[in-house]
Length: 510
Image 1 (cartoon, helix red, strand yellow):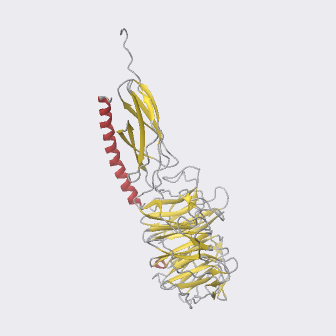
Image 2: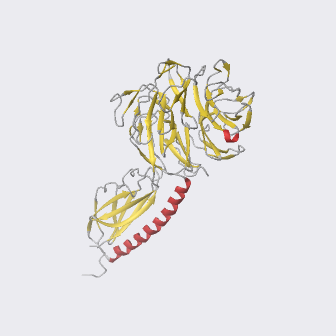
Image 3: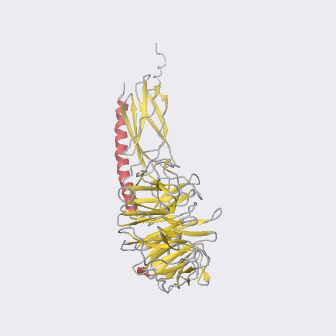
């Protein structure tokens, strides 16, 4: 039977819970202020049988481009219930349903690498390496009408090689890639076209492939990233801003991206732009940089290892797709270890937020996610992966609005011992959760709740926890523990039985 000391412990536990609750509220408030707004539990999503290179959102539809031949429903295994979709598919942004918009982008070694909607959402520009769109002969870049998925007749440039990046303004469509000519005109890896396909005077000379383009018409420039070393005859390592109308160099970013690294992704908000890099070789720069749009001042730079492929900004958080495995010097980061394929960071100070859904490396180059887009508050992600959070899911996934609802991982296992008369000490290792930093632990004695404790944890730092229960000396009890994030509670652990130490007999007792 329980003693008075048990009641004292329960009161103490209650006070600790209240204090922790207040602290948790403050921490959660800080987290919300930092911008983490998504759950780490994926929504049911269609899949591809190959790699997704680009995703885009326009007028209630998410468009997916890549290197694949079929899509299949959520939960279907490879080869089951396949629907033909040649390198391009469209889905309802809210429900995830497959839509009939399905022009085939085909040709030798065909692939769709870039998708971008016009600012009004009425057109979708498609780039890659293909010679046919539906039944029409084209040359690696076309435009669709989003209203009816028809191929536009006016935007048919002849691009000489792969288009890897597209961005738009009200008056221009910027293409970046491997090409050297566009519609018979010399355009070295970057070009600007009118919305109807005319080649604009914008001209720049880039010496290696362009992989990311970010138009900033409000600043009169276009930011360009890629593999290059020289632009317009001058050294520009992987990142440069060009005059939006002329193509002349507007801003240089010396020493931002070191030798051995390339820029793979660009994103922006109202005042800043963000750079995602991929390094080649040990110790190269693989992380993210934030810069001020107005003058090109660097705001912060993280030092995570594990190539960054995609970026998107949403409500104060920078979401990225990478295979980060070493972020120990970044606030909120982790030591070298397993790969983390999705991250969220505060745009203010680069702090890594507690949002850790994951994929595997997948197929192809085995990099995992390669494309991100926000669509009506839902984050869509595409890439090479074949699992999400350890479960089969190929090529495409999505995450909805928070608060976090992914269930805790690694249910705790109790170890019990009796160290003093009437004292039972329970120990266990903390669990962790993909989108909740703090978890609640409920301890049961003989089926009755006797204590509640809270603890913050992450996958790479799961502290040992302890609770000492006071019971009648010599009594025997069964203990179990359950962990909850407030929305999901794991089943109680296997029971452990322990007999409390008996009281010592006083000297001279008969």
